[in-house]
Length: 196
Ligand SMILES: C[S@@+](CC[C@H](N)C(=O)[O-])C[C@H]1O[C@@H](n2cnc3c(N)ncnc32)[C@H](O)[C@@H]1O
Image (tube, rainbow, N blue to C red; front, side, top):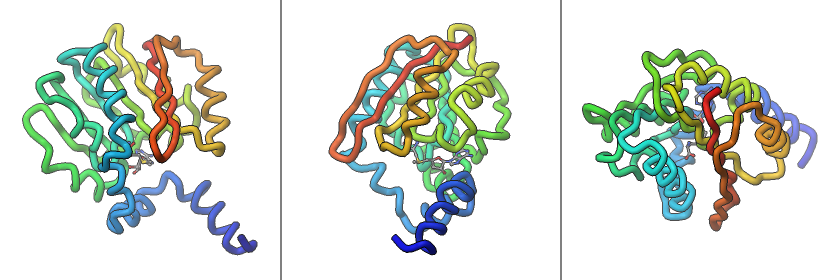
């Protein structure tokens, strides 16, 4: 990698990483469609399994949901409300065909979004990296968890995420459970944490 390529790469990762236009550009190119294929199924199935077991008929908020593949893996009879939210309006528009009276797709930036109600479960699946830190994101959304509410957070095993794993390890939020899912693409560390 030459200096120019490395600088552009660094700029894209560190400066534009939260930027809506960058995500819209990528979603318009269909760059994230592979998230809907079989190779991501085990990750989504574990998260949906935890959700349906821990909060049957619960109200669920998902942050950084992309086109909503996780919601689309749920048995709709197992939740009472599901908000799929993402900063990219292209991704959210692509998911909107899955809306019904209890399933909503909303454009929302996790760093400014103020939910209109409380949820039993808040899921941050491969998106916590776009907040400032694990505990800052969880602290921001903690007031929007109902009593005994839970977070589910997935952080992938890419070596660039070492600092995020460290933050998860040191989080002040009590951990209820956690597991590791290895797919043909990556390893994902999925943690269930309690409201404080
Ligand atoms: C790696 S994708 C993960 C998508 C999906 N959760 C999944 O696991 O298949 C990261 C997602 O985070 C979203 N994102 C990035 N910055 C965000 C922000 N500030 N607020 C909300 N979503 C954001 C992106 O638009 C993208 O859809």
